[in-house]
Length: 431
Image (cartoon, rainbow, N blue to C red; front, side, top):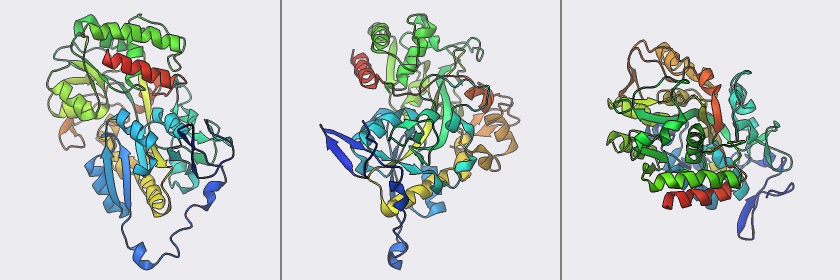
């Protein structure tokens, strides 16, 4: 639990570390450097980034090092492993990249520190999604932790939607997720009409289903699937009670014991392998995995479920142990991510950036129209690997950026029952 008045120190109480900052304490940062000897100014700063394979890609690392002159060390892991390491060892990284569902656990553990909006060059360009939770006034906000609910650090040290000068994460990469399916084995459905989360639990797919092994992501995929199949009913899918979780996992454990699930993947490359080797025909998927498989000639479709997507917002967080020149370099890297080139790069793997207009000039008209506007591709498009990922004549499933983010059923969320959900998830995995 965070206190209202604290220092920059990390405290140990009953074996749990809590980290809290006052609103005024951050003003003093950045004083280091102007009096440092010239020899130190010429040394290349080393920045350690802990995250997933989604954003920790070699092309991004090389481009960033070239553009901002720092030495970047990427440590990509699976989602659950990344969060576990960051929660217990803030000294092992300088910046953390993952999904918005990791913010509450990281903030509560004291593993991350506040980010000053005034040091973010492109803050004013960031669109309303992360600031208000809605991409447009008519959009559904979605259940659970829409990004605005966990963005701003309040005067009492809690996270909330009331705007302040301190934020818990840099809003950058984001997308909506669902599931992918191989249309060689499963007939192609109609976006928003027949495609359904319930497909993940249909008996005809038994033994050919995989789920992401993340208790704050895979949990919602399966909750949406079970609800779509009328196996359970929730009052608020973004805030499941212990009773809700008990009822859900009773159903899921029964499915698992019937060998309905072929596996639980831990990283994007592993999800690609599951589908490529035909171990599965339908599974939880992230957009880059679908793009990779399409580039390999596999007919995998990224579903637009009629119940709505599971939304996520990428978070870039500053370790509570990062200070001095590493902190300055961290701000340089955060600003680089919103400078245009990275947003154009990740658009080609199906992801969006928080200030897309800056990246638009680095995308061809055809690329922008397909990825952001949901229009038909006028020519073949290549992904980040240089291989064709979109064929001429294809239309992006789910449509435009605005339409997709207007149909979010639930956001990746660490619920108040987070600890209990972890327990139930691992009981399920090991059952």
